[in-house]
Image 1 (cartoon, helix red, strand yellow):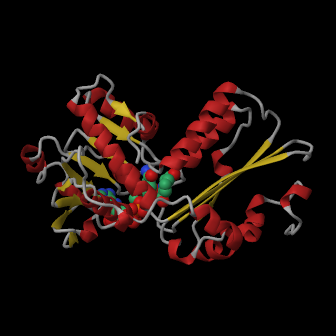
Image 2 (tube, helix red, strand yellow):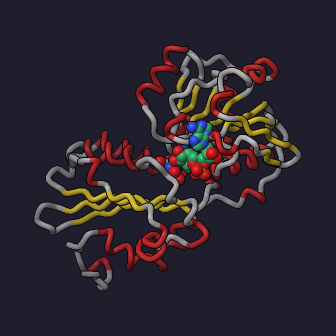
Image 3 (cartoon, helix red, strand yellow):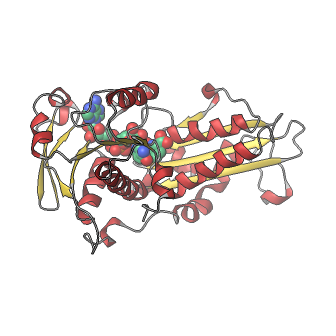
Length: 321
Ligand SMILES: NC(=O)c1ccc[n+]([C@@H]2O[C@H](COP(=O)([O-])OP(=O)(O)OC[C@H]3O[C@@H](n4cnc5c(N)ncnc54)[C@H](O)[C@@H]3O)[C@@H](O)[C@H]2O)c1
Ligand SMILES: O=C(O)C1=N[C@H](C(=O)O)CCC1
């Protein structure tokens, strides 16, 4: 079933998922070249830069740690506490010169209210798990990178509180721009792909509990373009062996990657279109998150009338490095 003919000579009838095996080794390094420079190359805050306290929830996880490291390198003041899941509570984590005390979820509202007193302008960044998305933030100014949970409720609670927040399931600026492009595409050419069939595949680390929030946003654009899609049909790959052999995820990124493929086929199979965005590691998200925190801090300082932002706002206002 695997087509080995060059893509321009064929309109594949096979599942694009199967064709990922063929794309594997060759495509991955090229796709991964979009990743941001390694965090280690970043320098501390330069002239004209800002500094404010930042508290990162989920520091025992991959994103939380990457964001904490990026915060230090960008000259922000890392608050030495972090919320995590119950089993990690005894841990202390060192990031730069800061020893971060890990607190359990139950401490979220009580023990740490003193942090908000001590650091009134602290921005809280959350990279935990879908089941904590709707927990009340002890501090009203936050950047929500965690995906899943009840998103409507999340927006409603921020709206009701009239506080500031930046919420995005996608912090990587190149992917944010791709999703924005898809949105504009759909707004300008609604219904263009009516009658087409859509296949969506997403591959993430085995620990990812929810469906990709980015894929959901892109699918909403395809729906405007005329292609209805049942989310239950999405192929979600979480098995490391399949990821290595079929998707072509490099081994070093098995624990942290986001590979997406959207494939459109016309009803008579005479035309097909394919969109991909493949990211390995956490660096583009960590950098984007710091950009988001700096952006949100500036909005709070200027008492901006808009209260809830997304990454498109950050990018459009030139905050993404
Ligand atoms: N917005 C983005 O651009 C973006 C990028 C990458 C990951 N993510 C999302 O961020 C989240 C974290 O990703 P990760 O790769 O760091 O995962 P991870 O599993 O490496 O880390 C999650 C951390 O959260 C902690 N945790 C789990 N449940 C918790 C709870 N109820 N309360 C507090 N802490 C809890 C865990 O102990 C762990 O340390 C996921 O939802 C993921 O989808 C978003
Ligand atoms: O869990 C991840 O890894 C990612 N999740 C986001 C999503 O759900 O779309 C995107 C970035 C990587």
